[in-house]
Image 1 (cartoon, rainbow, N blue to C red):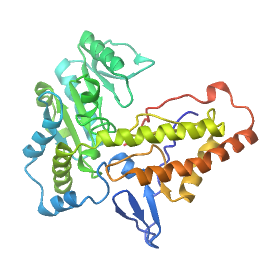
Image 2 (image 1 turned 135 degrees about the vertical axis):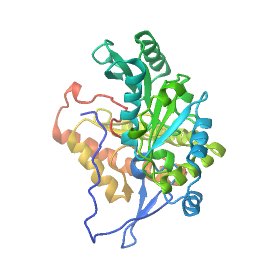
Image 3 (image 1 turned 90 degrees about the vertical axis):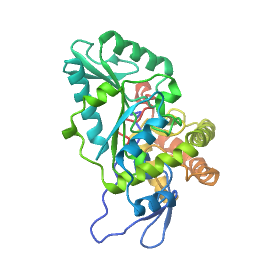
Image 4 (image 1 turned 60 degrees about the horizontal axis):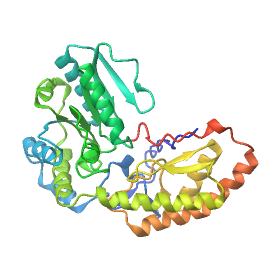
Length: 347
């Protein structure tokens, strides 16, 4: 095990209950309220239905070049920017640009423990998820990309403006050649973006970049304006560090260290489980206590001390139950609990 719970929420049946969302809370058709710690897969960075963003959507989108310039100003250096309709389109387009620029074909994913998978022969691009990676590790992969003549691509779908006001590259001081971003730019609406060296941006194929929707472009412009004036990353890191420290102490007190941990980056604390039965207890317990969460605790600007305190109280109640279930299940193999704190697949 050792993985966070990444269980997609099933779609509501047609004619079934509809959720209303505002800030960090959800209400169903019966008026029952939940505190949302999923936040559209972590992408509703400023909170659901933010009034400034909703107003911008109603006013209509600004010119795309204006929004591109707003994103460029938030990133280190002078990155060129292009948008597309969805986050899932941005990374393939960036890889294709790297192939055109280098004349090579292979793209490899870099991992902290394994390095560049499969070596560096015919390597056009190295893709890195910087969330939770140490600056020294990212500096090492920057050097490896330079030696190989490959394009270094940061996938900032999860980390952008959550870990630092200038993205992961601002936090670590390591600059990629290209970085891709997703729906967090539009506070949860579907959009993708590629930013980086101008020669690589010119190497993008326009056919790989369908235009974002007017609503998403307007939401992106408003989100970037708000982040430029009032970055959320410092507050998220403080809240997340508080949550992790309190839960770690509760975990030790309950004797549940071999069963559960709350790891990951402080802005996205990630539950880790040694047994699927413990994960099941956690999912049911959080739902029963009025929380909407199925994986990492996606903190947002709408969360504050009361919401974090409520979550800590839920853990205080649940962790002894984890210990009881652990005793019932018997000894846990040492290798069953691996601290993999970078949640793959989180939006």
